[in-house]
Image (cartoon, rainbow, N blue to C red; front, side):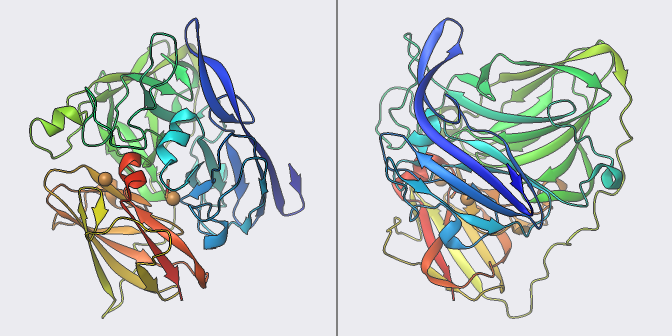
Length: 441
Ligand code: C2O
Ligand code: CU
Ligand code: CU
């Protein structure tokens, strides 16, 4: 709902039940529906007002992943919404166009709440991404398609596997990242296809899985173009044939269609940088079909893909003498500590640009996500990052036995009471405490 410069979103979370697999009812959670949550959309400069009504049987939170906003509005583990309560955050959109998402973040139960079904996209629009400026496909549901990719395991009766979601309980088939599902859902749909009517299609891909890594590509090996990452458009499209995404990473790709010729988007075995047998246990040998794209016999001609997508906020400049912070990811801890709600790990000055370095253990699959901002990758494994990591990101792989060096522009909202989080987005690890807190002074 819209009123003046405000966007009003009324969201109600409830338990429900729906047919995710043919002929079976699966108990689920959802927002304004039985599974997943509606795509929210707002423009830079608008004020977002949300009323989040929690009719779930448990306390939860709702976190705006990738949004630049005050910590108290962030929906992290401190903004608990009790069953029956309504939470009303509000903020002004002050960041460039991007594909963001939202999901629960209750400390110790994030994986379980996301697995049950609470997750949705939040699209931010701005001037740059308006059709006349970039020419990118932007007709939602027609040539601009959201793909929320998740893996799940189902029992014969249709119930979802929840064991090992938020705990590292060990039972057969659980690797170091918790349960990996053997069934893929895209926007909550099993075995999906898309009818295509235009020559170019923009796919906004969100890896909303708890842990699984996807290595997307087409079965005919066709080229596609990466146009945006988590926190916004790239300076220019990057041609790729494969694109690997960790949990919570997003990418917007544009792919060319030929009339009447079906294209199959697949996930090929990802390179996790782990040795045997961890690699296999963590999904390094898995292949899944993701989506069939079925073009009509006659296609509407799209505008050509532009050479330049934006006058970029170039990679943020790191000032001389910038503070460098080092973090070691080990087991399910950061710098030898598990998350504690009452402990603040980092106090940083508002709007400073700092260098944060995350180093992975040689046997662990980890990522890092920083709340309240977007960052640039300065170095990945001691090298300049590859083109696919050069945009503004908010989640990135931490190489096993290597380091990722980030330029982090700190949020501008001073708040010494409420912290922001940084954490591994393998949700089982996060729930086990692979998370730290920072405040802005
Ligand atoms: Cu996607 Cu701390 O969250
Ligand atoms: Cu987040
Ligand atoms: Cu991890």
